[in-house]
Length: 622
Image 1 (cartoon, rainbow, N blue to C red):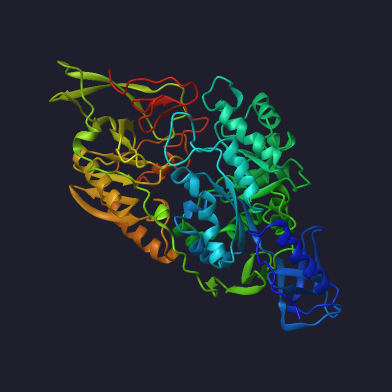
Image 2: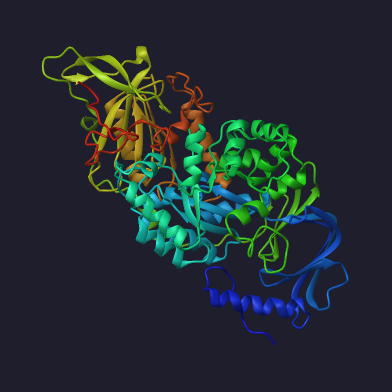
């Protein structure tokens, strides 16, 4: 007779001890196992060796014993034999924003688990910036309801992203210490993005950030880094010396190699993976233990199209990496880095029984996936029940604008008697230390757009205070040319106010009001008519529905958007393309190496136009 056991990492260390005391007796054959999975072969990621005809003995959600078939001394209630399949550990995401799938975690699980991803280190500064106080409650809700996806939250350092932003949450030393103490599932501090605040004691966020770093170090957590634009050796050395443990922002193999050689754990994203993998192989890298693959941001429609972590592994294999090493980069390597090896990362005793069964290794063809000690998918078909999560009002009602937004909110007034005004103009993904200065026409006392120069109006609407404060200026190379047309979205990395760009102030107001009514998502107004919306009703970032349903809505939005004449100018950014400007979701970033940005009006930036590197502000017109 056995007693009921705690089931998850949401429990205390004492509960974890009870689980392990039970597992050791099962391993010794003194208590019965629940089931035994026998496989044709198994990849031991610790030694990078394939072992033939192996049995995995499972008790509850965990593995109790692993070894050659027929040698286990105990009994089990159920035996499953998969002689033609090869077992590898469940894949893990070392750095991912689940919010960027735009699915709530229970539907994210149904999407990514059939593609091998059974655990995720959630870089949680997206939802944190919307509702910081309820951050951990949000990430634990789906698992508590029965989802087999393990989510290890890393509370965001970028809450707010800079000292010039506000609303939704504020994390400092005390808050981070509380997060680290609250749950064994919290692994550390999410990517430290505000490098100017780290190195410069005069930066208004300096003490806040270092307080969070101190709290993380005190709890023996991991301080994740974000070293975008830091490529010179003095900066790389300073970044590592500051205690940042990793970087996922490498653009070239040379940059990745230099960061690796300075002790940084490198997390390679799909956009630069082929070049970096080939370059590291050419440089003779033999030890890949300091390398993992990071999905970072990937929408659910794109995941349906290309895959999840499995796509990252296939891309690495195609670039020349041995399949066994590529699998290590999404299993044991990220688990070691995040100090999670007692729980995930390998098929070994004490770990969760998360197992990917492959029918073909070179192509990484996934036949079945087990999670929590039971089969949960076959092919890309999810077999487990999707739990019903009763998301509370704090998750459902996050667009707090207690008034109608009007066309007048987007007017940029001219000085009296002026026929033209000078205007500060930036482009999407503006990393330049200076902004453009453009002569803009004035009509009826208002500064006008210049579509002949691909210049339109871009605005940020505060969705946290209730006041609907608006900052606005002119941007180049984006937005609609068609009259009375506007696009608005409540996903605006990383503060997640509403952004809107449009060819008329009235259309901009119409689009924002549509988002206010539906509590977030996308809204497209074309020639004065609201032609398409997509709802992100949870946090203004996600939707609680299957990936296929969301993809269908996004397909309609893109179809309607294809009828719009979108202005375009290329920038340095390789993912800034002509057509529907979906990438504008990321054009509101304020982390280094961004310089001049537009944020919601704040005490340190009353018009919202600020250089986040220096703290300098400037009028949008003069």
